[in-house]
Image (cartoon, rainbow, N blue to C red; front, side, top):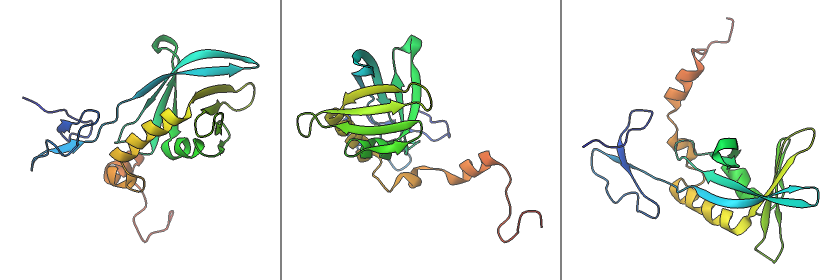
Length: 175
C-alpha cells in the first residue's frame, strides 16, 4: 500500500479535518497538517447592487504564507493568491494597497462582513464574505502552521535551486 506522495518526493499520511496530525506518526513517516477548504457564497458589490458569488478559500501548508481564493464557479472561476497574514489583519482593520485591499464592515458588532477589493485602475471588483466565518477558518490554518513557523516549512535549498546559480559568499558580483 502506498502513502500520499508530495511533489518534493516525501511521503506521509494525510490528516483529515479535525484530526490530530500526530495520530498516525511513525518513525519513518511524517504527518502532513491539512486544512479543509472553506467554501461560501459571498456578495459581489457593484454600485448599489449585490450579486451572489461562490468563493472558496484554500490553504496548503507547503505554501504557508499564501491563501488561494477562488471567485466564481469552476467554469468561470478566477483565482487570486493572497497573503494569509493580510487576510487575518483585514478581518480586524483596513489593510492592503494597490490591487488588493481589505477592510471589515462592522455591522452588528463583532459580526459582519469582510470587504475584499481586487483590481488596480479602472473599476475594481468588490466582494464581501462573512468575517467571523473567515476568522474561524483562518484559525484552522494557524493551527496547522502557527504564525512565525512558516519558514520551517520551506525547503530553502530546493527554492534556491529554482533561482539558479548565484554568487558565492564573500565574492562581489562581477569581481
